[in-house]
Length: 163
Image 1 (tube, rainbow, N blue to C red):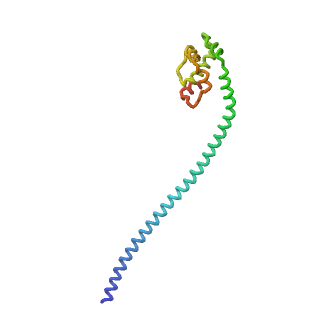
Image 2: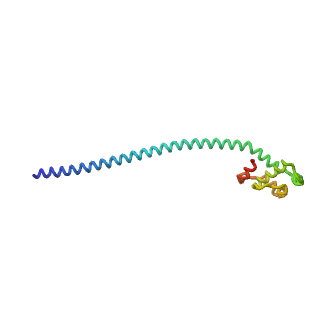
Image 3: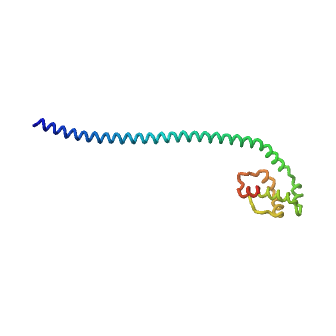
């Protein structure tokens, strides 16, 4: 009898161990599935990272190309800018006085001065000939033209000048 009891106990223990084994196998399979899923996600992220790095390299190359072009364009324009600044500095007060004395200047003279003053005052307000003459009398008229900085130009002024 004692052997039968031991066999029964061992059978119960075996059934319990089998259940534990099935549970552990399920846990192991779940963990393996999770690891595979995470590995796939990591691989997808790595591939995306490689693609983004390639895109970034293309963008950097494009930026370098544009920068080289801008630098070249600037090197071509800079001498003309310096020449124009020197020409503006060479404008004599007598030249301005002659223009201011005109009761009604030629249309192109008024239009040119109005555009210059629009830029230097950063304003889109229309100017009468009296306004233009008054602004030309200011001591900073020539320095404002010489030191003009386009970076501070309002978009509305730029748009008006282009139209």
